[in-house]
Length: 283
Image (cartoon, rainbow, N blue to C red; front, side):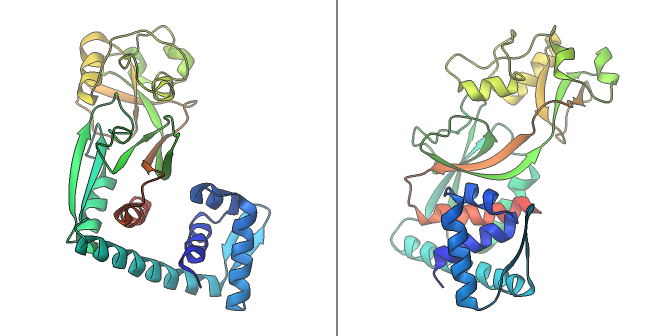
């Protein structure tokens, strides 16, 4: 069994869907299906029960999943140790805006346990660059939110969060259980500086042009709401000052938490970091 084929198998087993697994692996579906069929032939038993809506693991598949994860983890540790011996033992991680996400804390703890010899350097960035300095070579990998221009980047989704509108607590709309974007059309929205990624700006403006104050950081966004009554969007579940409230939006696509790195980067520390991140955010 090749490690590459085992990685294909783990992706399908975790996604329980060949199409989603192919997207995650940045490959087309037919070669993925052929690889899994060949793996089943090598094993001598079906690994998945297939249906029009997806797949489920067979008993043999469940056993192989545990073993494959252990093998891949060991292979990653070998690469990391070799890199450390070669003097490549530092990984710079960019974090966007708010480092209080519990997923980040779980990831940090898990990575410390499994990679005690790796020096992690963190670069905290503002909201003007959703790739956290990745394109400029300032970080090796970014923990951020999509969407943004993904050209020449590899993106792994870790989680998706529902989104709400942040309002002053005394705003009449703050008493509503939920809102639609159209109900906010007459409000001022915060803006990012000129030159910010267009896809990123459009998402946080609810998909259409808006007017309002220019901000760069999470605290500036909150202060714009508090002082000026500006509205802004934010993922649900984040702590806010008592003077502010967040109301869920029914027609806003969720915010995707992602890990992203340059697709040409072959640093073995990145793969081990991604696998640890995927597990940490899955909890």
